[in-house]
Image 1 (tube, one colour):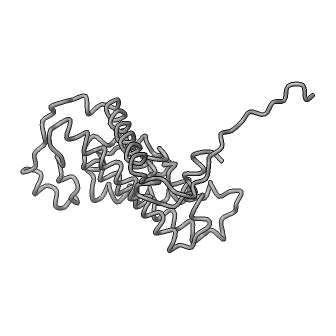
Image 2 (spheres, helix red, strand yellow; image 1 turned 180 degrees about the horizontal axis):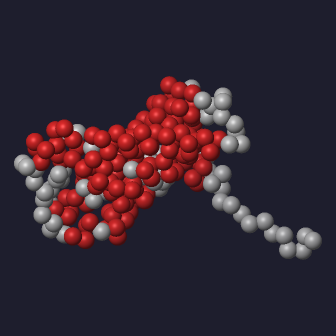
Image 3 (cartoon, helix red, strand yellow; image 1 turned 45 degrees about the vertical axis):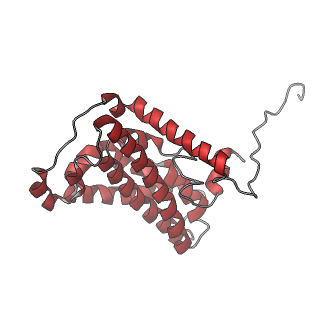
Length: 236
């Protein structure tokens, strides 16, 4: 069993089995859209909605999904909910949708959702699946908001700039005039290398806390055996 397979089979947890900080899944949108807290919240909540609905739907329809074609159905389910969410964001949160850009339709390609649908949704009933997917989605949201908070604070010295983008479009014009956008103090924090560095520091800090206080240790933890190369020389 590989390390990723072992982590994926573990129970959902905000800390011990976080999809971003432990499994290192879905890093592309996390690194790209975490330049502000507003963008992080927007994409995190959107991903959580698709995450929970997709897993619950796969659980309810597991008796009707062919095992051979299950990944096709999983992708179809994720794409359907992503498309519905995209239309709703265009209608009610268009300024925020413009900020998030291509990463809204790319939610259906998030491997963290797909692997959770494969591991859990096909085995659990829908209530347990909803709880499990909600915890994993909350872990994704926590990670992206934490990274976005650090990046925005380092870049501008403040957080929640352009907070009005979180409001629905009918209320947006009234508060848009009073909203303020923080001036950039350290522009490097807005670049992708800075996002990768800060995420690495967060993961390192989490691992240090785990090793020092034993937050992530379990008595029954299975030893992950490395893959060994089979020697075939001389067998023919």
